[in-house]
Image 1 (cartoon, rainbow, N blue to C red):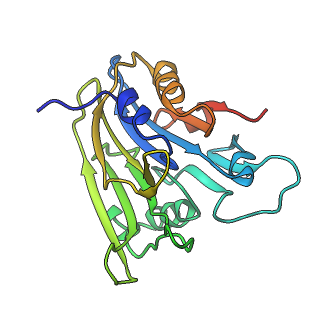
Image 2 (cartoon, rainbow, N blue to C red):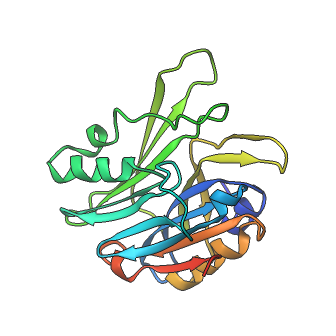
Length: 230
């Protein structure tokens, strides 16, 4: 079965919101990726920065803290790398550090309280010590009348060079915004970390892209980052 190239998948989704990516580049190295886009002025006025063993999404200028826009996007601690689109990243990292297995650590999360979209909370956790695999989690609102979150989990193992798995919060044709697919299998032509970041960045809609980062497990402090805002 053939899958679409990463740059094509991203370019075909004008407004993906925020996204998480796990990929093996052509040099054989595994990399995590996180990117964010925005339509409003407040969503555009953000930057992605390093802080010790964390990546932080912070406001530019003097904007007040907004927990739906400003959060720890990635953290390495206790033998785990965790990254995602909100405050659940810190909660999942704490649970894993306390010894909970990934399925339990990714459970009990909720989607964002932002009607009418109800943005999914998407999270990736990877074991830095035992290399037993990587887990994606998504807390999504039902498309029916139920208000309880549906929590989806996906264990990803044995990626070959060029393989990538991605989740995005939204799927948008340029007009209507809907929640994204549970996950997307795709392919990257990137030779290494920097090429993967360039592939993601160049495929995002220029008027909407805000920031993106790519990082090797165990090397979050050396993440490669691109920001629209200085």
